[in-house]
Length: 371
Ligand SMILES: Cc1cc2nc3c(=O)[nH]c(=O)nc-3n(C[C@H](O)[C@H](O)[C@H](O)COP(=O)(O)OP(=O)(O)OC[C@H]3O[C@@H](n4cnc5c(N)ncnc54)[C@H](O)[C@@H]3O)c2cc1C
Image 1 (cartoon, rainbow, N blue to C red):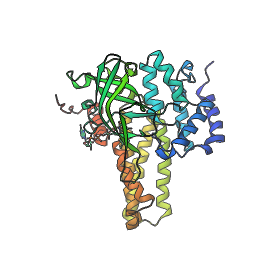
Image 2: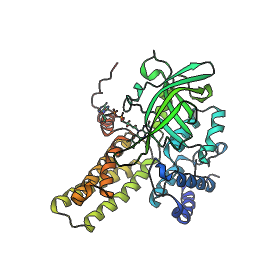
Image 3: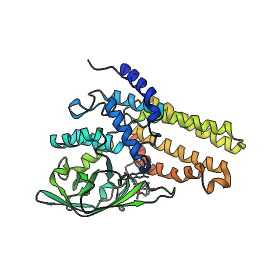
């Protein structure tokens, strides 16, 4: 008989109470390069303990439980302040797309190895000329018998340096309308012709890479899903992040607690107290919305993404203002201010979220599309 979510919750809670202290700090969806070794060790332990691939079928190394069990796990990890998995790209995006679109050979090559952290994934979607408008990507994969020859450039690839596999979107038909000429590949990152160059951010860290493809030969069986049907695969992948709203509510709760501390631990002047109070009430409104929403992804996910990242940006600026001139040079307040804009860009920019909310929730006129 399937384990109920209540029984699963109790089992997971007991395991986390005993093991959370061995986890890396909760780094969010993307494992930073300096934590990759700890992140992989954590993923291996989760796999051995039966807390990975929770809703994946047993024949692919999963636990055969439901999406509700996965949502419970993610929520409990957020409560304990530990990463629920090594990274979203591998365990949610790559794994989810291979489960849904993979051939039996692709499933047996990748799924178990991804759960065991032997296959570590990066996402090769964005390009210098294609981010929000991903359909405009220009990296080409040209069919040549039993292989594709790939040429082009990807950018903002988180964790490219430490990944041995990448999910890659490339143009396979240059004559078709832009969304109909793209294919989706599972790309071994050690293939000759792939060059990875770190990009330094304004925080001083280098968490991203540029990835250059020069006459890279990909075997034809690296194609995932239909030839020229990669847009459908990519979009299914990007909307498959179910279960994360519950976790973002818990994450938000923790952030609100630490923001409230800001008011009690420092002498704030009246305007700063006013700004803090406004931020806290915004945060509590989003928390209430997230609790009403439940674990399903929907347009509310855009409201949560926009609301939380904008609130975190404003909070980072408030902290910097309170700290004064000292925060401009170094320290956690300076790092917070420099890192905050990234949250408004990753996973769809704030402007793009506003377009989605305007068009799908408020029923506003659709944005004109370039032909
Ligand atoms: C922390 C982080 C991690 C990332 N990791 C990865 C990764 O691993 N792999 C990967 O492929 N990519 C990754 N990205 C890239 C990310 O997906 C893109 O930065 C994002 O999609 C925006 O694209 P862009 O940077 O090209 O900006 P653009 O799309 O060029 O946008 C520039 C500006 O124009 C605005 N804009 C664009 N279109 C519209 C519109 N239609 N209406 C109104 N305003 C608009 C945008 O909001 C933005 O302000 C990451 C980004 C960040 C910040």
